[in-house]
Length: 140
Length: 92
Image (cartoon, rainbow over all chains, first blue to last red; front, side):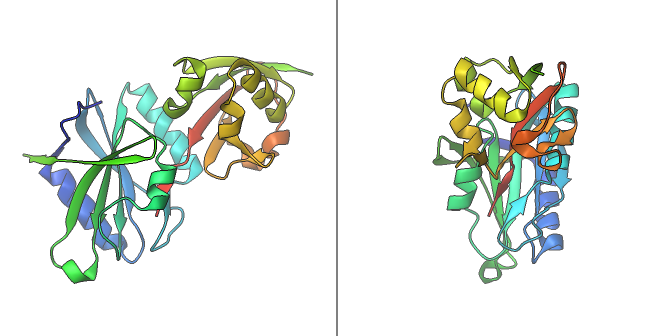
């Protein structure tokens, strides 16, 4: 996983995540970014099985397929992202309690109306219940 | 009939298994296998169970099947089965 220096993400992937968040509004959007050696290589939007404006969950069947695929390709999950539709792009108590991938960067985006058309894109590490925000570097 | 199965441990639970990602356990059903895992790696059962049932946001699969569809803790096992434990990816 990346060192404690933040998240480096291609701008195109960040744009795609925000587009997905807007497209799936009013429900939360979610997905992962996969890669090797800490590098964000491919974006994989995931179906939100909860289909809710306040909750997201990867379908358990999709989750198994995802981990098998990542394992088969010798990859790792770099980012787990989801959108907050009406609140800020900061991990909620629920996000913290369910954060089960300690090596991942947890990206939150927000599409809340009061900041439109601006959007928020923030990244965090969530380890042992502790949230640490980290800098995001958008690369070409 | 007690089965010997392999169990894939997710990163977040590896502190219990001394960082091993693949371990072996025995039991005729999932409940027995979890008890055996806890005997080998104390504290592991508490991460998987709450009030005697599987925790809602832990997914367990036997080969490719979500155990929720094959009896949860009563899911029957046979030797050579592969059990995968994956915390849910979820939030709000």
